[in-house]
Amino acid sequence: MNRKILFVAHDTTMSGSLISLGYLIRAFIEKKYEVFVQIPFSEQSRNYLTSLGANCIYPRFFKSRSIALSLHFTNTVDFYTSNGIKIFIYDLLKTIYGMIYAVQVYSKIKPDIVYVNEYVLLQYSIAAKLVGLPSVCHIRSPFLEPKYSFRRRLISTLITKYNKCVIAITEFESQQITRYSPSQNVHVIPEFLDDFNFRFYNERHYRLKYNIENEMKIILFLGGIDKVKNTEEFLLACKVLFTKHNNIIVVLAGKEIRHGKENEDYYRRCQNIISHYENKCIRKMNELINPIEILSISSLVVSISSRSHFSRPIIEAWAQKKAVIASDTDHNRNLITNGVNGLLVPKYNINELSRKIDSIINDDNYANLLGENGYKKALQDYSAGQNEMKVIKLVEQAIN
Figure 1 (cartoon, rainbow, N blue to C red):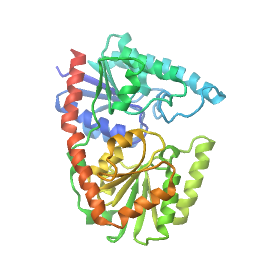
Figure 2 (cartoon, one colour):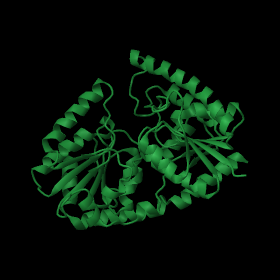
Figure 3 (cartoon, rainbow, N blue to C red):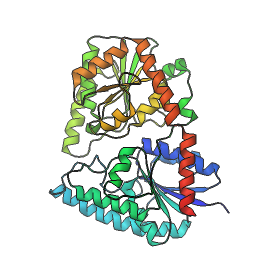
Figure 4 (cartoon, helix red, strand yellow):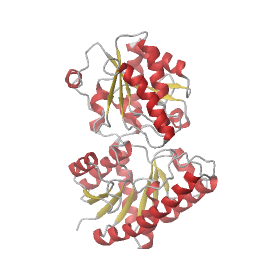
């Protein structure tokens, strides 16, 4: 009888972690596992996961909303405020409900192992251990900002205590755990890119599909409208470029973060810039199931998050031999060799960002060199085949 694996994911949109999870699902199915995924309902995610052969499960009272805890680095609300206390209480309720619901799901499916796709669903690891099931936790991003180290210490301790194995996508994610809770069961396995990412596409076909003329150079930003992704700074840098070039078009794709007054104000400022240039120099797209189509016809990809984390668009751009510009953060310094396979720019420096975009737009040979060097690094370090096999091996060790 085939083994069963239950993946638990928190994504309400087509995020990089969900796409990466899809590669793992496909690999486990090829190994004859029966795969289940518990995830908040959305049409996109359902179509994506079922096309891979997974069985989808939706939490009863959180069918289309995430049951994730507010432990992610993007959560900036001060704990000692009324909003912080509300979030804490809500997290307690989600923890209790998540554990009760998890036990019900485990009892029904009877998986051999539970695979928690991010630490914000830690309640599923705790529930698994309580009923005697092994679990694995994939750490794809940093924890809360270290203003209150006791929370990081608590998260790290719970992760190592309630999981047989922990997989971190970079040394930074690994160290944030082992700093507070040393463990031999924390393993670093880089992100995945498969043959689909490295395939080269018919540029003419996709320019026709997106109605973009051959002579136009595309600057791609996959961060949506999000303060953490520094969308406004990117748009302001592009305003400078629009005064110099009439052959560039900015494509803005991804989530639009609008909840809360601060995010709403930020969204409005970005939208004011976009509306002035939309359908002329700026094209806005929704979240893309397949960003590789637009990547394949882009000249440059920009990823300038204000907070350090692993940026999947960088390696996806490299797989298509595209030049990248990224913010000068710990993760990006570890990923990019400045001037060799990409360019680093100081955070919030709009003039420097504009200048570096200009340097690539003006020099096709330089853009091609950066893209070619990035392609070599992506092939060497982020091959899905070798990294998926490492994950499968660790999962099977945890089961046994």
